[in-house]
Image (cartoon, rainbow, N blue to C red; front, top):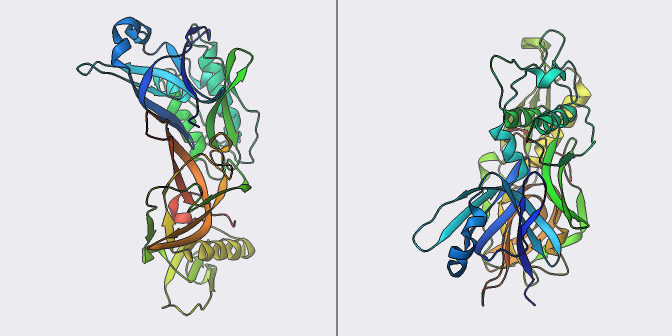
Length: 369
């Protein structure tokens, strides 16, 4: 049975519902890791004359997506521009608001400068600062998660200046880029008739291994999965280089013979501890021994993995038995795009994936699955 979707429009600052069932078509939406996610759609041409005034307040209204009475996405409407008989609309998650705001007081109005500060706290301070300004309260709640990462030092505090106002969204992006710090995503949940807007923090990462979810050919995988087998980054042997120079530099080699042509990669680090260097070198070797890469997968709603059970950051098992592809491995969900069904066209979900175990040069900490 086709799921029941509603598109609800509310006032940004008060949450007052302006319309409970906006007639949108050609809808695509979804969340992402350490980003606001997005939505694109069109207002049904039949209703443009009667309802286009609801979309006149771009930048001041929130669009919510509800699926079978469960909120899946929410964000600010930023654009509604007529194109012939159609009225396309574009929205982005709540954090997109921070990219339209600046620290006009410097140091987030006395919360900084930051010395050995938790990046999670800085993000909470950014939101608190943004929402305490007149007409700036989006009613966004930020998790109380803590990380072990630090930003700013006694010699070089993390600070912002009143004379050079920093973009608040960029500050959040910088906190997520601190080594071993955090990832974040957004959720919306009904609390009575009010939609709670929340930032979920994960330190050092979002998600968990989901043994309860599977994606399998013949069950919930559709389309033609595109599995790439690229040996450019493949290696069974990794040379790990630590801190120091010349003869004082620590060097470890981790490898395994597996019947394939020997391929090597080098891992540059600043590790002083040899045990830690060995651990990172082995982790890198395990990551580089994974040859197939799967970055997207089209799926349908199924008891093996209901759409409403998907969470950004989770690791899920994928089994593919295609004519030209056999694949069985763990991948991490870093976002997805939903296309609700229309007419005879069924609902489709495109998962955006990355390897659970990734080489360090990818920019993400590689972790053993």
